[in-house]
Every structure is written in C-alpha cells, then in structure tokens.
Image 1 (tube, rainbow, N blue to C red):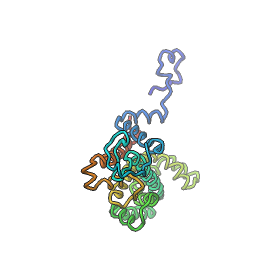
Image 2: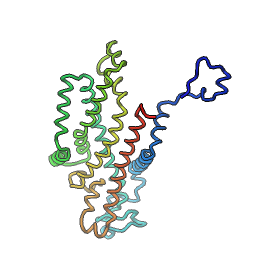
Image 3: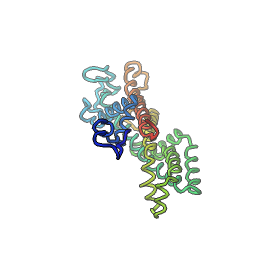
Image 4: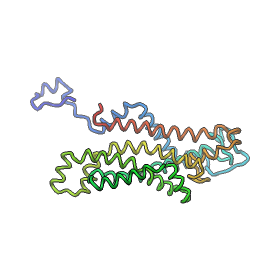
Length: 303
C-alpha cells in the first residue's frame, strides 16, 4: 500500500492518485479476505437464511407444528404440506423450522458456555504458567480422556433431558479444546512488549488478561467456536436420534430423524428422513466453511 511521503509536493499528489488513498481499515481487510473464500461466503449466506427462517418460524411456517391429522398422515409433498406430513399428520416443513430453533439454540448457547469455561481456564493456565498451568492442564487431560459420547449418554440418562439441561451438558463437556487453544495463545502473547509494559506500570493481572491479551487472542477463539457449533449440533442430533435428546412432541432435527426410522415411514414416506438429515448436513457444512473463511480472514500473515 502506497503511503504519502511527507516531502511529496502538491503536484506529485495530483499526478499520482495512489498517494492520496487512505490505508484500508481492519474491517475492510477482513471482509476482503473473507469474501475471497467463495465457499465461506456461500456458507455464511445459507446460514443466515436458515437462521432467519428458524427465528421467524411463527410467521414463516404455514401451520402449527403440533397440529395433527391422522387422516393425512405421511402425505406426500404438495400444496397443503410443502414437504409432506409425518406419521401423525403434522407438517414437516413447520416442524423443521421449529426444530431448527431448538437445534441452533442448543448449538449457540452450549458453545457460549463452553467458551466461557475454556477461555477462563486456558487464560489462567497460559498467563500464570508454573504449578497453576500444570494443575489446570492435567485436569483438561483427564476430561479429554473420558469418551465424550459415553459421558453425554451417562449424564443424559441420569438427568432427564430438556433443552436447558442439554445446553449445560454440552457446555461442560465441550470446553477442553478451547482451553488448550487459549492457553497456547496466552503463552505466546504474555512475553510481548505491551504485556511487559503493563506489568511494569503495575497493571492488575486480571486487567492484563481480559483487557490486553484476550482481545489479541480472539481470532482463533472465534474460528474454534464456529467449528464447535457444528459439532454440538451433530451431537444433539445423535442423542435425539437415540431418544436421549430433545423429547417429543418438541421438535428437533435429531428427534425428527428418530421419528422417521420405522419401516412403515421409510416405505411410505422415504422423503421424510431426507429433509432433517439434509438440513443437519447443510448447516454443519456451512459452519465448517465459515470457520475456514474466518481462519483465513483473521490470519495476520495472509494477503
């Protein structure tokens, strides 16, 4: 990027327009890098559409998702039921929208909780080091060594599953990767000049951690959070498919798949399981694409 020379004359500025250009802001640089990744851009657009449809489900859905009509069960897609009906005669499209609200809520809220736990533990371990680092990281190793799916099934079996309990369960089992990532970033950043200067003037450790170091480590954390949301949505769908997640009649993409696994449904309405499965696939793929795009856009070494 050309910079204006302090010795440049007015004539030189008029003849060379490049000298008059202001440097790009960080926001412009971020969006330029992000939009270069076409898959990430498409994924972000698709995600925004899915999220908006789910958020405004009461206005978008053609009918009540819990309205039953046994006379119209397993109806084929048509004018009345855009994506067909399930084995109780409920509109599949409406249930997909309302189920998406639950699945996305569990994903976003669980990851928010996991970020709080993981960031706090990783920041303390990376900043202080020594015995504190050793104790916290051994605790992380213990949690990681426990099979996640087995732990989830065990906890859900003990506590009756509900939306709020699932959010807490996923939050307390998904933070370990974030903790390791934040610890690594803090180990790198704590020896930088601005941190040493803050210590020299007597700044409190809590302010150094959360006001100086953490903002500089947000890039990798945001990328990790984006990828983690997709993983949580998959885990919730797996638990609901096993009958251990969101319980009917409350819809979620996972329990809609579980509801469609009977032989009768597969024979008479093969399109039914395709729709929630396809939404799970598209949503998780889009989160992964967006995560890749954010990683490239937030990389200071990138173009």
